Length: 229
Image 1 (tube, rainbow, N blue to C red):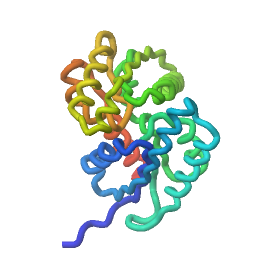
Image 2 (tube, rainbow, N blue to C red):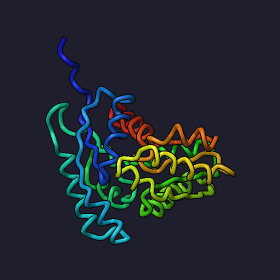
Image 3 (cartoon, rainbow, N blue to C red):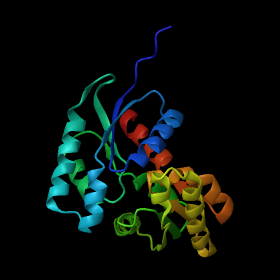
């Protein structure tokens, strides 16, 4: 029996190679009918960390990636949606949204939406420190749009991303879980704010004892709804 034709062609744009696996796993479980392809530029994360801000060059590179992704065609037809998995580049992703006509999703917006449905005291775990300010700003903006007054506490799982890059997934998950525990005293939910942190969900939930929201599943389910209606 021939394989079923994909229902949509989806571009995944990454700045960290550690985000590819979680994104692929989420698609396999929550939208297996889609044809997802990857665009990876690891220099973006390095340059963002060194610059300490989004500069005009990085904004231009995102526009190039977004326009290429939007016009890509092949298996599953022309690209029907774009999912960015890099959490430190919110304004650059919003600029892509304004330039293309297909759905474009920031990596965290669906997870933030889910967390806002759980309460007003929210915890955020990151392992890429430059993501911290961008994600806090994005979450506050989403809360303000909904006329919500939220408290956000953030913990950096220092050393976790480095451990994952070195192949030590167990230490990565331990450090992420420890960061979640530090937040768990007075929060309604904790968001693991990067795709690469999703693998620590079970360990963090067991250790912290509060609801844990991950970005890949939330993003894939939200993009599926937007593309398919």
